[in-house]
Length: 450
Length: 181
Image (cartoon, rainbow over all chains, first blue to last red; front, side, top):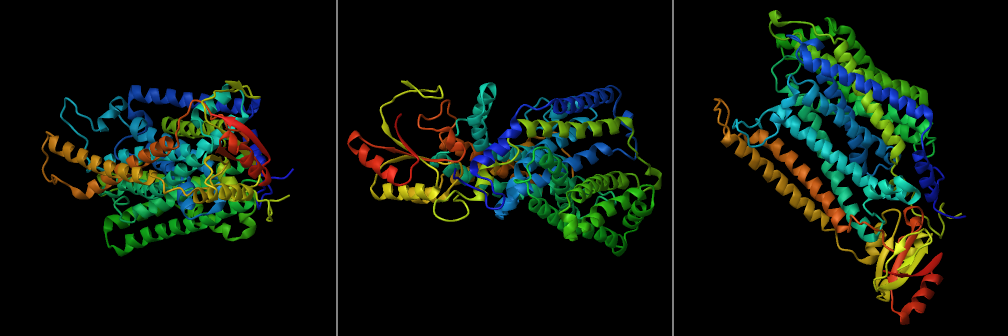
């Protein structure tokens, strides 16, 4: 038999389809058991949120001065996680970085689930009266009140909803040819469902022509959006006057941090996915190594931002800025500050060694460390700054209690639950792009002819 | 009406031609070039991946999706700014110290509107211009086209049929068959 074969991995076109679509076969008991456990914990966290609704945000440990706590930490963390998906799928697409093809689909899915979960926190969980969340939406009303389009909170609503919509459409656009491939191999109800979402795609020249033009434009439009979203999120803090928040470095600092955490989450999810689905030929060690190299860059940028914050606290001569920084580094939350520095700026430096970059266990452990570090970073910024502002009378310590912690764990469970559904019911690798990367089968010469 | 081996019902509408299935893309390009030279009517080319060479050979113009996307961006930007202006002018609770038309924050509002509507228009454009969604697959469609095979559908009269078939068969087509649609 002759046919198309990928240059590096030695996969023919038909094998690409087989390799990826076999992951859509009926899952085993362990899959359903894990999925059920995650779902049960999500339900439990939902119940705890109901308890919070009944008795108010005070049950989650919110009191002056700590009125912005773990819920907003979660919001910033999940928005950050969402960034790498668009980075990998849009920015690297524009740069023609071919190594992205094996991981782009999963990273995009990660983006969508992370944005969905991020949106839950400011829109519902962190709101005192979530049943009136729609007041933020601009619509004619009897109160003659409109949302303030000058407010960074309004920017947030616009940016996050735009980002979610764009990410979803970009992801879906990429999925359509693969859904058609899944439809063509499936039977029964699955065939109907894949067929419905594939919209009758048949890979004609006309379809590819318009699809290709649109996909490039979507990538071009998503690129500035991804930069803007975390800049907008950073303005929630930077436009306030609280020392530790009020900083012009925040937008690039937040964007770099978001990409840093997102890449770490990509490694955290894809290493097990690669192992479970035997994707070693598609998500190669070279691909993971390139993610690790990008992580070095992001780690250095984040480390530089930490150093600049320290420098500005001293160089500005602003006493409040200085005391805020000293509180971060040596005060109540100091252990978290040093964990953050180690995990985000020091640990990724291990990737300078090739052996570490190419060792799957080291990659996984360092990715987990970065995830922890980036979560802690958001905690240090949001809760640390809020608890120690201008007036000693208003100082106070916030620490999450069982309500915050349960809802936070629930958000992680929801994320894993959605990701597991995605991995088992949708093509988790972009087949058409893997084929494009491999190059078309040629009769005359090349490595494709067998 | 006839029933294909996979069980799919195919309706005859009057047009007829030949479908050739290729394994190698260089064979496909060669036959496309030959048909273009001879001005044979190429109805459709099927491919499991995007090949820009097909657009070049078929002489396709740049996609109109670009202009539709631009239109969406302009509408989105102006629409969002118009909404922000209207909201500010309609607000009944007058607060001091804020400009009536704060242009700087509206850059962000405008930006989000541009991106949002440009993307929505772009996606709608490629779907509709690609003649999607479709309830039924085309009669000429083969399941292998989403996997590893390429196809050319050529319309021809009964008089041309044998000549076209000969070209396709000598160009490396794996299979050539009659199709009506």
